[in-house]
Structure formats: C-alpha cells, structure tokens
Length: 355
Image (cartoon, rainbow, N blue to C red; front, side):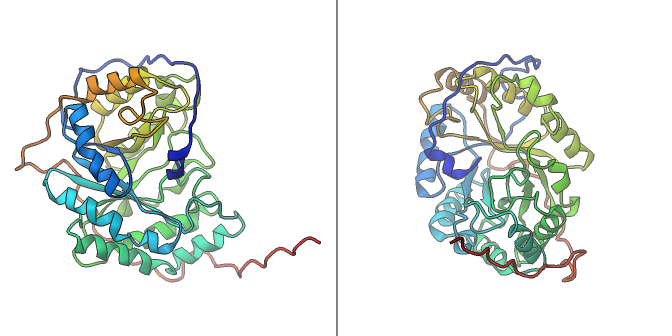
C-alpha cells in the first residue's frame, strides 16, 4: 500500500463473512502490537492516544523512510531520532522501519529503465546509501531495528519492484543486507514483506534466500471486494502459503501493514485477522490507521473499531525484564561478488521527441 494513499478517500460496499474458526477472545501469547500513525514526530505523538484508546500497550513503533530521493533513504534525522527516543524509553519496545530500494520510490519509474537500475544496485552502486542508514540507526541506539526492505515488491506500485528482473532484484537485496549488516554494531532484522495473494509476480520468485531474511511478512488488506477472510487464507500466495513457506524456511511471520479496504466497515475481517495472528508464529503486527484502513483515526469504520478494541485491547506486554519475542538475526552474509550472473546493459537512449 503506497504511503501516498494517506490522502486517498476510497469507499467500497459489501460485507464479508468469515468462516475461519474462532480463537479465544485474546491470544494466549503476547504478540507485539503497533499501528502506523505517521512517519515523523506526529506519529510518535499519537502513540499514547492510540494506546489509551485500545487499553493495551503499543510496543511496536512503525515508520517509513521517504523515497523521493536518496537522502530520504539514508534516514532523515527528523524521522529517525523521535522514533529512536520512543523505542529506547522502554526495553519492551521494538522499531520497524520501511526502507525503499529505489529512489524515487513512489514515482512511476519506467519499466525499461528499472532492470538497469536493479542490476546497478546488485553491483554495489547504491551500497553507501544503506551503510549511511545503518550507521545512523546504530548511532541512535536502535541497532536492532526491523528493516522492511523493498516492501510489496511483487506489485507494481513502487520503484523497487521485483518483476522487471527478479534475479537482479534478489542480488540487490542481498547487497543491501550485506552492506547494512557489515556496519559495526548492527543487529538488524530484515523482513521480506510482499502483498498478500497473486500480484504482478509470485512473491516466491522474489525471495532472496534464508541467509538474508529474518522474517516473512505480508501486507494484508481487506481486498478484493466481495471476498471472505477464508478466501484470503486459501488464495494462491495467500495467508496459508505465507505461513507454510515461512515454516518450511524456519522463519516467523509478520504483518507490517494490515487493515480494511475494499469491503468497507468489516468487523469480520478484523476477527479473522485476530484469530490468524493468535494461532500462528507472528513476531509482530501493525495496523495501518488512516482512512479507509484504520480503526482509531478513521471514523468511517465504527463496527470494525469496536471489534478491534474488543479483540486486541486488554492485553499485557511482557515484564520489563522480558524482551519482546523477536527472532535472532541471521549471521551477516558474505559480501556478494562484483560479477553477478548477469551483465549490466548499456544506458538506455532517450526516446526521440515527437514533432
């Protein structure tokens, strides 16, 4: 889901019925919970209100780095510093940062040019941007940040999408992870988070390898219109496949983004997500809390809001002596060679101007 969608006002109709069996009212285990409330200090300021409304601790801070240019990818201080302070104020907390793989990220990069950029990235052209980001995170004391790198790569929204050249994309991912883990003091965890379901390319075709992935995520929204939660479980590359794939690779799962969408105010989707999270190896989950997706900051979903408070509220975080249940990071991969199994094509000549 694009960050620019904050400004969109989308409406839909039709409610869905969840046929997934119900779990207990609250999960028997603690699953670290958060909400995306804003990228910068405004998001940090809203956490206390969301937490008070929910009646449960928020232990996951979630922000996005701007992808309008490489300085944004390197981690602007006005975004990272407030979130680092929030994270360090309580050892039970964790920080999740979505990091673009290309700049510009949300502007539509032309498909003919993207393979060359991905291959250049796999050759190391952009390494220093990610080393800079890693050094900044370490210097701020948040060296264990969860990095959601190149999210929704199986779709067509972002500049760092996988479909133009999956081999180069995977090589580029590996290069970024090696660069960031190679910074002294780094203990980052990397979350591979495609969109749920079939998209432009099967997300399994983009998987870069167990040694450079710590968590298998899924950005899961209530779409398409008219589908049930069970459809989302069973669809190709859906929730069941995410859980099975992660288990086969020895990884926990996450939901860096989830929320309502094309089926309007839909408490059954909230219940379905709660039960799925409660019954699987979910390391963290963050709801997207702006319209049309949200439950606190979006007044158009009152029934879903009530369901979310009922199901996710009233939980208790671990004691201060117990860290949040995050997976141990995979050892740093060996720096990839400078000669990957592809060649970088010559620059693409600009098309002639009609006239």
